[in-house]
Image 1 (cartoon, rainbow, N blue to C red):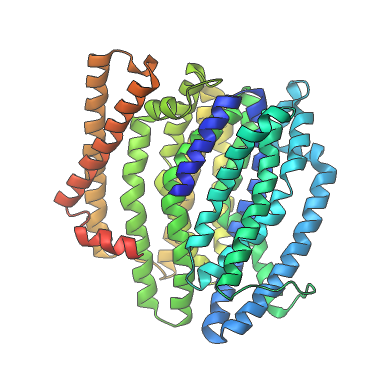
Image 2 (cartoon, rainbow, N blue to C red; image 1 turned 120 degrees about the vertical axis):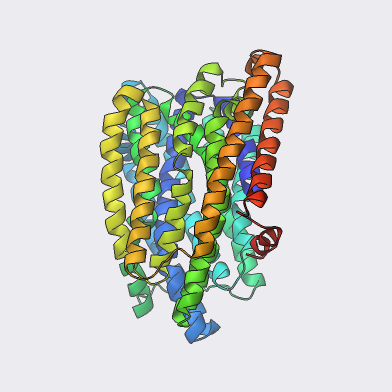
Length: 503
């Protein structure tokens, strides 16, 4: 949560300094390239392959064997990453032509994007090693330090905006330098905590041991299986550069708001669920594994369904209060809030993918998510091409949401067919209550918006204080209405909050 809050502060400052145009489009592409590789290979595929193997060794052969495997994986990963970074630095201009073909229509945009990407790309090297260390810490039950690492990224970018902007060529250059520095800082942060917990991996000569070979074998299919959402976002970026100048930025800001509940709930659930499921399955306690998956699903739905409905209902006030200042005007607010509404429709699905994918990865099955992701990618691309013509960047966001639902439902169906997942009665009963409570919350929000417009006129054109005050009332009253109805319908109980906290 702290990471998401500091992330919002970061994005508010970026919107103020850069707005949603030439420089912001270029920086977001430069930041997206290493971030995409990081989410696909490091957080997604690497964790999906590494964590179950590390957890299995920890469970069966003890801490020293697990640490040896972690050291081998660390050394091999570092070597491969170094090669990737060097190649990327050499071929960067061509990479920009691939991921941002629309930039070529504006003089100097491709060249600046390549220059900034060369500054940001080494971030991939450090943050991927951060992901390995985070996987080690998570597997031994240490979640706080890895979860806090993104806070350092946000704080570093905020500092670079304030301190470096006056002395660099552009604000986008200052931010790019900040990205590189943040990778180094996060790496040192987890090195410190790994040493502190006496599970520090050693740098050894790269060795393709049987476990490392098995891990690498599983990484490639995991790239697609765990990273379908990120691949969809890459497709969105490519097409957005063609739709309109500023479209990349509109989608970025909208996705950042949508990432708040996704990051807090989805990442937390999947991060905790994967090592737990891995240990339970290795220990042969299948009923406990089913119970864990149902509770993770219940937890995810309880937070994401109302969050999605709220974001769709009050998208304009949220975007206006967060970003509308400086170089970010009313036009940018309208375009961004429309994209947010479309993205939010898929919010529960994004989290379901993380929950259900963990069920496959914990069983060391990376092939099935590949097939599902392949189908979802085709759906996303086809819908993008169809919807972007009449709806522009909003059609791109809507295609991503529909693709996410397709992926999540397919994963659930296959898990159930294999006998690895079954909805228990508690989830069935509570899901109805969650949906009903969310609809009541939407009714409350719409009534409040109506009266706000009646009493205050077009309050979105008023001062930031007035807008923020109205948004605060909307947010807290919406949360209150949902919580009250959830208790009345027994979608949740007071004891559940205590269990959620322990989870």
